[in-house]
Length: 468
Ligand SMILES: *Cc1c(COP(=O)(O)O)cnc(C)c1O
Image: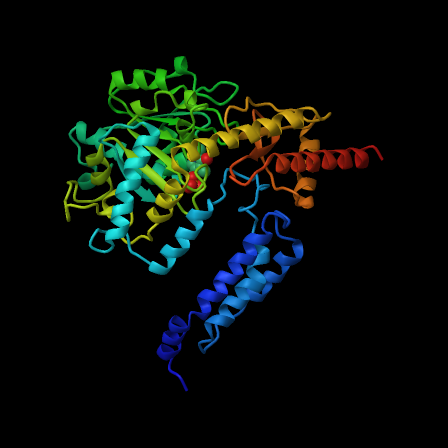
């Protein structure tokens, strides 16, 4: 009998598992644009096969993969298609997806240059390209993290470190017990992950000074409290419902005068800066101190890819390392100094590959295209009796309402049941809305029309049931 080790050597050498994965992936991509957007109830039901005790003996790799291919694949959500509009997600550019797959086989640890020179190089290049695309100051450093949740945490940690350090307090050494008080100023529509970060950082959600927002969810500059050098001001590029942008230029100028720290949560919206048509929305972002942005939303890198950018490199590095000072381990980039983790997969590879594939014009075209498809959705749905769009579609988000909350909820349920597209719900200004987020490179004009038809069919069916 073969030993376990012999079996694994054999699986590496034969390449059978790779062939199987390649074949399965090929088939998956072939059908993903036609398949129902959300898995069928039957496919979800069948996930029961995974509910078992771990067996004693090792099985073959092939059996493991068979199970995933047979039961896992049908239960996936078709995010790679063109009609998934739920939450604010994203597709994956083919070259990025393929590069991730390549990097999976390389299985690099991105902690330090000495652990993976290729990862260190591509992170260095990606950092430079991102700074250029977003028009950020030259001193800006980037950390490659799992998403904007982590990036918000890192950016705010850098701000916390610097504000207290300027006040003569080392937060790494002394913590927050007895520290000078940091003021936190945020718009009433700040994203939940910002609040989570504030909680984790020990700053206390109850300490937030909330700023009034307008009918689109934008911070009202005149509603800002007096800012000072103890203030951590949190702005937003891309409201998660309406897609609106805070007026950065005006607010950042005020904040800079007061020497406050400005953090921008730009998970999906920061990419407006890469679009000629839309960069009026991000005017002034370069005046902030830290930024959080996702690759896996608007840029369409595969999951998980988020980036923290910080103008004050020393603050970022100090905040994420308990030494409080910047240690240079090698002359090249050691990625772990810019992230909470030490060991980390090489997500910089697919980020680099996605940007390299698209080029500046390609990124512009893709981001602008999402906006145009969102506008198309808003226009077509508004022409149908019984639907209203309560937000200005400035970016990729469209909010849709029926004549009552009940109608909106029932219509959405039916749309989800049809599976021609997938949309989720939210509350907007106290009323239920269906939220459409156009985030996929694959969304065509036809996809929008098919989805709008599905909306119409759902509403008519709900109305006909109501009138019985
Ligand atoms: C999605 C999102 C986040 C969280 O990002 P993750 O990548 O999911 O961690 C934060 N802020 C905004 C505005 C978002 O849209």
